[in-house]
Amino acid sequence: MADDTYSLRQPAPPEQLTGKPYLKDDEEELALHFDFRTVQSTMSKADPTALTLGYTRSMMGFLLLQPEPRRIAMIGLGGGSLVRYCRHHLPEADFTAVEIDPAIIALREDFRLPPDGEHFRILCADGADYIRQPMAPVDVLLLDGFGLEGQPRQLCSTAFYDYCYARLAPGGVLVVNLWAGDEMLPIYLGRLRQCFDGQVVLIDAQEEGNHVAFACKLAEFPPRRELLKERAAALAPHQPVNLPDTAERLRRAFAGQGRRAPRRP
Image (cartoon, rainbow, N blue to C red; front, side, top):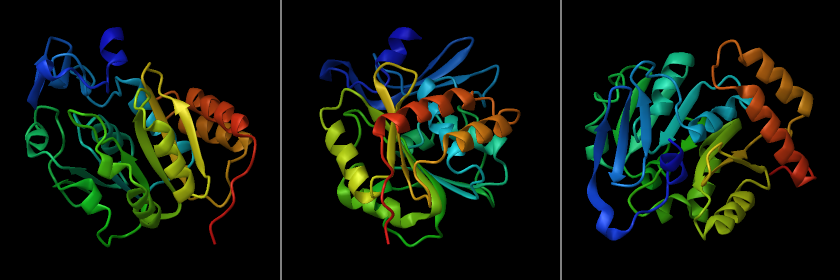
């Protein structure tokens, strides 16, 4: 997987683009592609709820900041790795997934995603439009929206991040998968810090080429190191994503920032 994970979110040359999502199937794994070179999502056939890519495991670090989410929304479905994991390991949480491409949604059965029900649904919509609609506050907002050309600009504008902040409940967390090679990355991070009053931390995603940003709406930021360790230890028996490792990466990132963020009135 080394070559695949390196190019996980790297746009391919035009001659390699197919224009439509497609599946690569082998005995052990099902993979979602947009082109012949890059991997968007993978699923282990032996353990469909396992998070096989490091960036998805890193995104679950939100549990260290918001350990009891009641409402989760996700923009960008892909192969549904985070859907399967959260529905299995956080069954009490209400989960809404938003995907703009009906061709992606059409693959939901291939990726063993559950049918819509009382506490789970997949909506076909532009995430930028969805976030502007009135809704009950969410505790966690997962942002993993990528297409052929990388992250759509409407999902990384200042206005979009402002809406994300407004839609989060107190104590909520926005989690953003980011491609390290995007020349706009420093600008996106600046926008996040502006919209979230500096409550933003960036960690590596255990894969070359990806970072994960956590933008928070916490009463105390950054959280105490001891609190991160306590939560990681308490969650570890129930969450097979090595949260102690993520807690250590968060601790190092917080230490590197060196100051506490102001609170928005």
